[in-house]
Length: 177
Length: 436
Image (cartoon, rainbow over all chains, first blue to last red):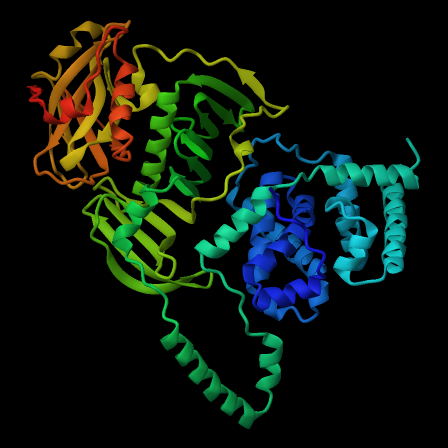
């Protein structure tokens, strides 16, 4: 059975990881951002297995460098940037070595329309991107997102609304002939 | 096109989110790696250090303090040291293993990834298929008890072949042990040659050689007791040694998502019906070699006590397969030895006839000098002036599993009314001696 989701803020969990909480506290951060990190990697790699590998590497790298994170409340944006960079590195490596994609259909890789939406999410400003990912990928309601990010509910609602607007504009522009 | 309004954007976002189902093993795998590789957060903040070293005098004092601190940490928290000699045995006792690396065939690098899980599941992405020497292919294979699925990414084909549970167990054990063998070689004489870092991790580099054919380098992390990387160089004795494989990810007992063994056929792949393996070419299925009309196959080799090996093999002329029990003979010889030259004698236990006439022979192989733990056997067949060689791993099983494995494997080739030899009978009886 999966461990219960913590409602502690990212800042508290980062502090706890570097203190007495150790890897157990870090596991809660991983649960919180795992799908978002996989999604950030999938935009680059379009392969669920590879995205999962890249996300794993990203969390390992983040765990090692956690003390270097100056603003502990910005863990979400930080991990997604690391994940994106890891995926780019893996994609470059695969191009160099001529590695091929694994034959998999479980879960299915992205349809073009999904990739288009994922790319649009990746292009959002960091604070809006995190809110979207926590809301739709991690399936948190607005009040939990507010707790995690330690921001007022009103701010989260506004950021969601702005993110929707930006996505709508981006997608409409891309689909225009 | 449907206009993109607030409601269908939310619907699309919701369905996009569902593309990423919960992966309960993700966190488990990560924590396993953190623990196994002894990963710790680097508590030095570069930001604070930068500020600290800004002034010359403060910087000097800080350097001295830092040096004292590092010395005291090193002295007071010495990590347990692991010996390299025990690592191969440790890896062989694993339930599962995850490897990534590169195999070089004809100067071309083929990346591969393997996840093997005892007793009978294995997935290899990038398995080299050299059955046609003019068309070396890299395929992806999923073996489970019941079937073997082979995906050919270049031809976009999927081939599903029935696989008996016994064959699946034998093959998974063999693959797992071959990989460990590939990493560590047949020699146990490891010599530390230098120290280096691999991706920032300090490693001791060991080398082991079987002159003149093989040299293996292992980058070993003494803190975790696991190899970080291995390189195998091999030569045929005529040309300089060449790099034949590199393994750069070695993950013991990874958390495994069972879905990776689900041989779902991608929509753009064509399902092909396999041609039945020619009954007179068992070497294509189990490994071996051919010399003109002569076919040799060493189907399996199982480690017994004192270095003895139980082998199932065949050797026949396809023009007269039923005459196979008369070979080897004066024109056709067979030599069995380890890579370091220890020879084995072969003692026939029973010969099980096949529908096409040749026999699967079950033999006890006994080394000239008893020594358990030899992992590779080389069989050389010579006919007239031609010769062929096949090297295969000797599979080891846990002592408690071995008696049943030995019986069940014999049942694969015995006729319905045939009685398999028990492990005790094999180990203690005085088998009929046969010419080598």
